[in-house]
Length: 458
Image (cartoon, rainbow, N blue to C red; front, side):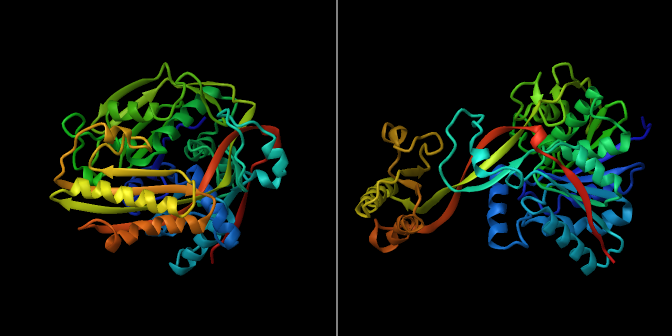
C-alpha cells in the first residue's frame, strides 16, 4: 500500500458544463506533489443515446461533441505537468474520441501523448436485440416499443486502472459508473484490489463526491439568504486528496470562488443515493451510514468511515429506444390585458392542432402563472385568479411518432405573429427527436471490459 497522496480534480459534471472550469484545476494540480489526475464526467443516459445516433449517421462521430471545447484548453498544460486525464467523453465511440485527441495533440505540438480507450460497455456487440428485450426493466415498466438505439452497461474501475498501467496520459471511456472515473486512478496508484472492500468503497465515495463538478463546491447548493456562496460567479471546481487508507479530503481549485463545507459535502454525498447503506455500483456496495465529515481548514473537508460490501452479481445497463418527436413553441404577450390575450392564443393553438386531425397529447403552459407545478390540462391555472395586466409567455408542446406533424404543430406558434391575438412576440419553436430509456440488470459474466492504447502522437 502506497504512502502517497493522490490528487484528483473534476473539470466537468455533465456534458454542457463550463468549458473553462478545468483551467484553474490544472493550474492548481500543477503545484501539487504526487500523482495528479483530472476527470471529466460528461455522459448522461440520453446523452449516450444521442451519441449513438450520431455514430450511425457518421462512424467518425459518436464521442462527446464537447470534447475539444473542454479538453483543448488544458491538454498541453496537463501533459507538461504530468497530470493524467480520465473521462467518459468517449460516449458511443471512444476510439474516435481518442483519435480526435491525438489529432489535437498533433495540431498543438504536444509530443508523446499516449491515449487509451476502455471498451466493452456496448451490449449490442455481445447480445442480440431479442436478448436485450428479454430482460425485465428495473423500473417495472414494459420495454419500450420503438427502434433500439443503444444498450450500454455501466462498467467498473478496473479497466481504467489497466489503461493507466499501460502508461496512458489520457483514458477515454464510454459508459462507466461515474465514481469509477476516480476509483480507477486510485486503484492504480494505491495498489488497491477489488476485494479490499472498504478502500474500494472509499474510492467510490470520492468519485461520487467529485462526479457532479461544482455541486460539491457550492453549485446547486446556493440559495441566497439561506445558503450563501462567496464569489459564486467564479465557483471553483473540486479537488480530492486521497490517502492509501481511504481518507478523502475535498477542497477546490486555488484562487476561485465557491465553498467547500460540511454542508456542501453532505448534500453531494446524499445526491441520487437511493439507500445510504447500500449504494450499488459495479465495484462495491457502498455504505455511508457511518461516515464522519469534518471541516479541517478553509474550504477543506475530510471524510472517513466508508464501508464496502460485496459487489452485486449484475451490472446495470441503460437501453435506449427511438421515442418519436417533441414539437414545441413559445410566444410572449405583455402589457394591458396580456393574460387574456395569452389565453386566447392557447385557444387558437388548441383549435389549430385539432384541425390537423391529430390526437397527439398537447400541453399548454402560461409561464408567469403556475406553469411549473401545473399539469398538462392547466387545472391549477384555471382554478386561480391572475392579473390581466403584466407579461405572460405561452408554451405549447406535443409529442408523437411523425416528424412532419410535430413540425406542423410547432409552426402554429410561429403563425400567431399575424394570425393570433394582438401584440405577440419573441417566438421560439423547434422539433427534437426523443429518446425513451429503460434500465435492466445484466449478468456481469456477459460483459468483458478491456483497455488498449490507440497510438502515440509524434
